Length: 122
Image (cartoon, rainbow, N blue to C red; front, side, top):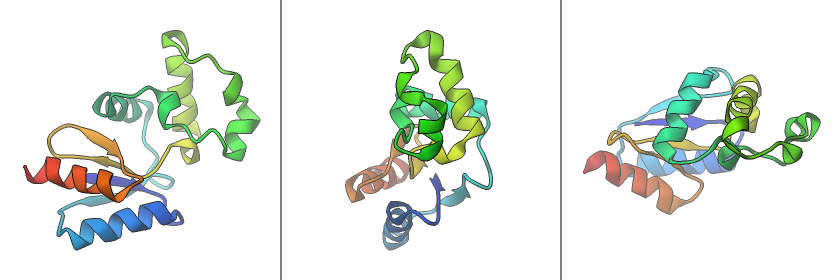
């Protein structure tokens, strides 16, 4: 199991604490330093069952500078969104946990973190 975090994020810190409390075996990826490639983002999106705009932090200053709110949200724009996330990792919603069963979750709640642990333990 891997968790993508920004250490400055309170939800990320809470997720890591909960993983520790649950005794989970996991790897931390500080995705602002170890930036995921477009291909890695595509893989995680597939595991999440989401589109890139679903995991984009549209309220970030960078999102506003890029004008993301006006970008189309369709198959034709998918690569453009993924490229933006790879170029501006701060826009990626966090934390994201990839479970050992091949799934992934945006783990912004304790329930989501526990779900990821159960998918790995099961």
